[in-house]
Length: 132
Length: 290
Image 1: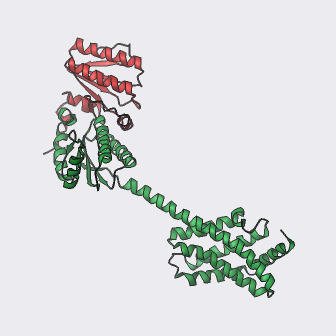
Image 2: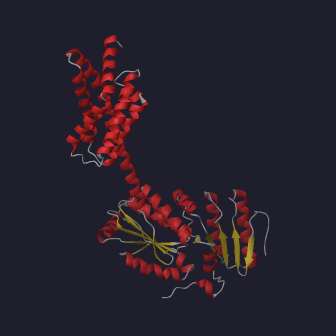
Image 3: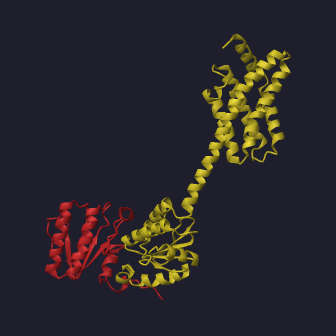
């Protein structure tokens, strides 16, 4: 488990996937620290996927949005997919109105969906495939 | 106020007090004659209304104030006239009827004055006073009537806006929004809020926006659609636009609007058929932009 206190954001390693969640609104400094820490962790662990849960955030400013976009590009260069999960409706509306589309960032409805997209299944039962 | 004015005023008040019931009855009778009423007020309600208003009128006359403004300054009278007018506005009576109702009271009052007084000077003075008083009441009642109707219109358009953007569950993890009418900024906002909330509540993976009921698509409407699609994608769901009729497809092509990043289908049925496979495998295939 890699957990460094610098940005105040936990980064957990689950197999080849890194899981992180933003709990409070990040200021610019800790956003940068978070990017750096996560990038290094990806490089050292050789993670294949990164899940960032933002379901607790009520506000995403343009800098954090920018950070997420950069992070996703960086991670792709290192061979990892970034999925941003659980964005709240008001946040989505605000971002669209600001003209920020988070281009290139993959999104998922919830952390669970995001993990499934990264190839993580709790078991066969959690796949919930409907009858054709 | 001169002494003769005061005298006339006392005289009219006296007449009002003494003949309150007669005047109220006569007024109701006049209203029924004019009416074929159309409104759903019963005779009992009319009587009640008339009694209250005549009482308020004599109370107002006994107090001070210029007769022209009594209807605004005397609280009880003001409320009675307002209520009377609002009742007619809500009951669907025509504006003519609403204003005639007050005019009929004038006639009833004048008749009562003529019964007790035989001096033409006195009758004239009383008539002037009654005119001043009730013309103001008529104006107020008309104003209130219009306001009442406008309130109804405002409420209806608000309801229409809310009702015209339902979010329906079409399939497991598939939502649909049938849009009807033009898509302006306010509508887009409401659609977006409703849709995103429903996506979160249902954990839906695909949202279908059906624009069969949207008469024209111009650049502004396309812009609004794109915004909604982007917001849906930010949430982690995908969006399909359906119901693009041939003329609209032509317009979109001619205007050079780029909808190539959005999955579009001709009918809601096609869109549903395209949406269901997307819900099978949550993740890479479902969330990628096309």
